[in-house]
Length: 116
Image (tube, rainbow, N blue to C red; front, side, top):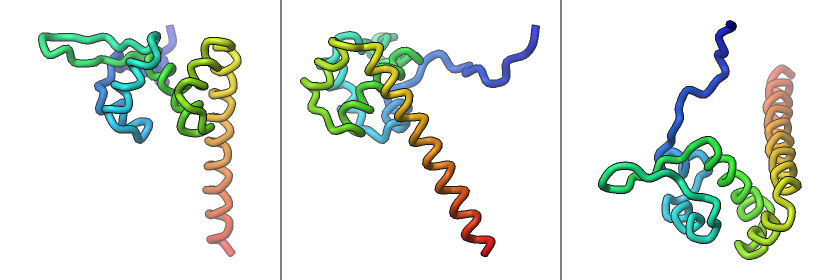
């Protein structure tokens, strides 16, 4: 059996880690949990510490894409997700990939400009 070096070994992320991933406030994530019923991180311990899984992060990425990147209001984002969840997921994934390619191309252009 081959060793998978790309596998993410972390099972749970804290609210602080997830907020930093997306450049959000922790309060924004807590608010989104109240607005989007399928976004329910696991809570552990007597202090009810939130533990986000990869699936939770995928949900947040979808909401983030609709609200922060595409400019939809929360009500519109909920409507889009409820009406066509698969389509919204695919669009968010494609947009994320395209933005990554754009960033790579800009970095390459910057390197090429430095050679001249």
